[in-house]
Length: 379
Image (tube, rainbow, N blue to C red; front, side, top):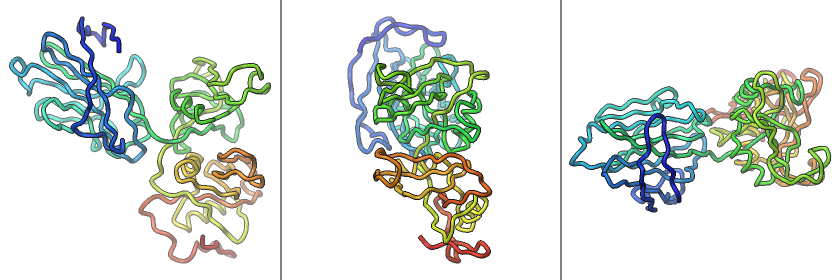
């Protein structure tokens, strides 16, 4: 793998680096199901501090524990180990980094939302690998491991990826109604984050086909096409992720592509004696020690928990949806997915409801609640 000498945040890379492959065999990544990571070991001819990290990416899910692999080498006869500073940062954008964890000697410090969730693995001399527990959606991204002594430093990158699902989203206002900040907000409200290009591309490889353009986390606007057609930019254009480029974040409006991951709970369809208005649906879930499921939670249940229900029901944003894993003619088409019937009148339109109960929340003690003149059925 060729390397190029470059400037890295104000410092120069070593002029000549030899590249060889090695196995990070001392401790497999916790969330990698026993797979060993191959690393690039970088050494120079001066014995200076040199960092090695895993190429590619490490993968976990929301709520999981992951190790970001990083090891360093230095001349023990020249450097006191207590003078070595280890620093982990997250790449926010190409020119911006956020502090995650710093260690020097016996001093350790985590920053921001990483407090209480991060520590060093410290599996022998030269191990700077970072352990992240209870991984969140916001942890997704690229991390830099930097090792510094008094005179020299080196750094390597590790990419943290999450298993999950992309879902396109637009609010009750309709298509193309969100600027960039509003798109970020609605994804968070529906248990997700704005998706990255890599996540959208992976979804396209798995067959995602969506004809409406949406914001991604880098400020670009794109959409995946698996079946070219006239209404989606002409039939004779190739398949792929169509790219509108980087758009004005305040003035221009599109849909959003959101990403969510593993659930710390369960989504289920609450059967009742009769259909419900939105307010009645919310009360029914509450009586069952649950809440109305968010859109992202329904998508995660469909993708990860394989929830398959041919019953239209309310979800948290006031839309009517249902998840189909095994397509059949009476359930809305030939493709698996989460069907969307739009945003009906919350007061007068009656449907079922999808509820979400987090882990550790007990079930209702008296059946499935008591809402005045009716009682829900047990599932």
